[in-house]
Length: 139
Image: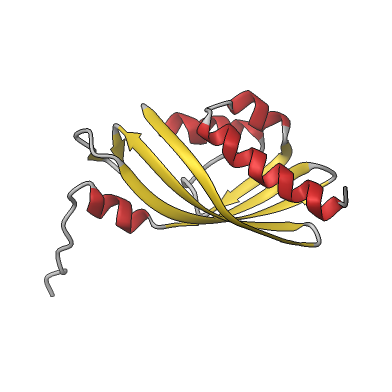
């Protein structure tokens, strides 16, 4: 298996472990200096950042479905869909509403370890699914 193919498998496994809430297994795949861009603000680097990220979820049932995986060099791009039932998101209660949204992740993977992750997700779509209303600013 080439390094590129191995990195693609690592990226797929990453989201599978997120779905299964296997935080410590994720930590084993994570560099001590890992950072996430586009996620919860103020996360410390490395596994402690992952643990803190999971601590922000609250009660959640989620399943990630990988739609596409594209890799070049030490970067792997994953486009995925999440179906989740989360108690609240960004402070907005779900009242039992299931949310479905898309996200794209770019992982920088070196020697089988995730060094850095960039996240771009449809968070606006999620809050609208929860019943949030957009209101123009008064000016």
